[in-house]
Image (cartoon, rainbow, N blue to C red; front, side):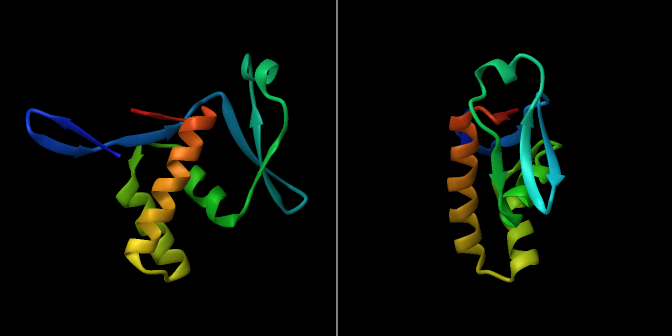
Length: 102
């Protein structure tokens, strides 16, 4: 999750696409599409606490290391575990088109 240019490795930043909104309804955190995305969106996505925490952090552009640190601080897990989990989560969100590299 790094960009290599001119032999320099730079962490990629990720941001939630503006056409998605997180809403807490009935104790659940739901991802709600807005605008044109509603046409192609077949279901509402429910996030657990950690997923919602990371997606909220991506309201602004942020990198995997910063996101992993959020998990370390919130859940007191090992940095390597947090980074691996975060990388997998970011890839899933990229594949789903919910976030984008910026």
